[in-house]
Image (cartoon, rainbow, N blue to C red):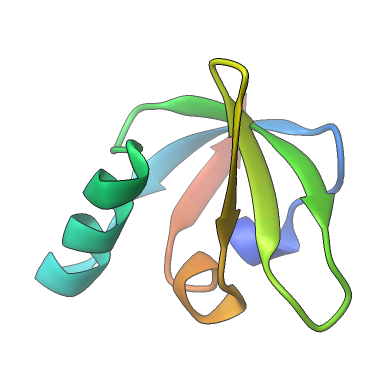
Length: 72
């Protein structure tokens, strides 16, 4: 399952960040493999908004579609 398939309010763990480009972009957002985050919202035809430590981060659909996650 990828991050762009999550529903609002669902908690999930980041399982895999494939490739150096995806890893570097995720690190800039302050997320990494093994992190547990919450889906704060999904904007139609737009980014996936996640919440971690009272911070909300909007991740583009292209990047969210490459990040593998599992329900936490």
